[in-house]
Amino acid sequence: RKVIFSGIQPTGVPHLGNYLGALRQWVKLQDEAAPDTTLLYSIVDLHAITVKQDAKQLAQWRKEMLASLQAVGLRSDRSILFYQSSVPQHAELMWILSCNASMGYLGRMTQWKSKLALPDSASPLDSSPSNKSALKLGLFSYPVLQAADILLYNTTHVPVGEDQAQHLEFARELAISFNHTHAPQAEAPLLVPPTTILSPAKRVMSLSNPAKKMSKSDADVKSRILISDSKEEIRRKLRSALTDSIEGITYDRENRPGVSNLVNLIYYMDESVGASPEMLAQDMQGLSMKALKEKAVETVEDRIRDVRERYEYYMRLPPSELGELAEGGGQRAQDIAKGTMKRVRTAMGMA
Ligand code: AQP
Image 1 (cartoon, helix red, strand yellow):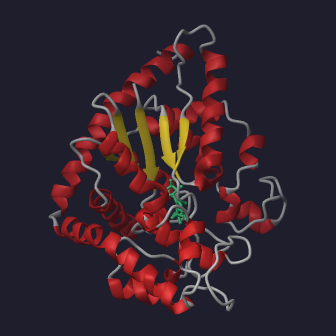
Image 2: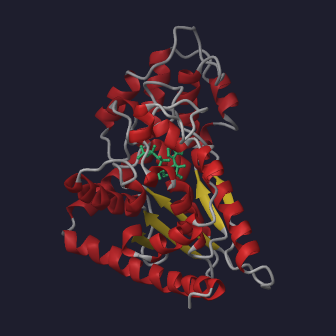
């Protein structure tokens, strides 16, 4: 039986990177799932606090994310939608897994380095003062919590964007080594090693700096298009997107990252436009940069309009109605999580 789990941090309204890299795939999996497939999609607020958050802002973002998940087409009668912090077993399993997770492996992960703007070669034990005080334990062990999220539900498949592939490999290996240590004779694995499903639009890049991925926490709001943006906002952001002064349109991610990102956006927002981003670029080779951007505006607006309208609808609902929905999801998630924790505790001699 398939169990699909994925999460998103409540750190702002989702952008087109989140949408193409994750959310759209989540909806597709939901709509095509066999009746006995379980789907869980979590608003991972415990992950969000691995960097400093303002309490009022976080409360608002949690609500906006719940509205966003429904706006993109997730249905609470089919998928379990819930706040991670409403299921205490995430933190419990994380602690147990922490006792098996290697510092050396975690030290090689790139996410804590990119959040602190450190080079890829940085080590958690570097003695530079800024590094030592900025690196919090929670941020460093983020992948262990993510592994707990996944393993708690006997997840078989995890749909994510490419930036998360490294964490998924970590979760897989942690499950295998945990099983080896604590249940070597078991017929069925104690913790199920998950399979990663990478979305076809693996990495959507920032509009203002196409060397970086599009991100909710980028200080430059023009670097990302939100699923709630009006057509005017979409146009303003795309017009100011960084491209180059080479004539004509070609697809060359290395030498023309800005242009290729726009071609990708058009292609992945509406795959009916061509067979591949390369082919689409060929069809558009005679366009000016201005015309390419305008085509991107129209395509994005076309695909995002309904999502934006639904988002506005859910944000207008009384907070209690949205809240009830997440509570129901939290209960259903806990029922599954309790079963896993019972097995884990028994295997470890703590039942
Ligand atoms: N630029 C991206 N392209 C493709 N996929 C992306 N994802 C994020 N950015 C891109 C995918 O979105 C899902 C949820 O991500 P997240 O909120 O848990 O954290 P993140 O990956 O760190 O995303 P952000 O937008 O950059 O958030 P902040 O700024 O808060 O860290 C994941 O499946 C991710 O792959």
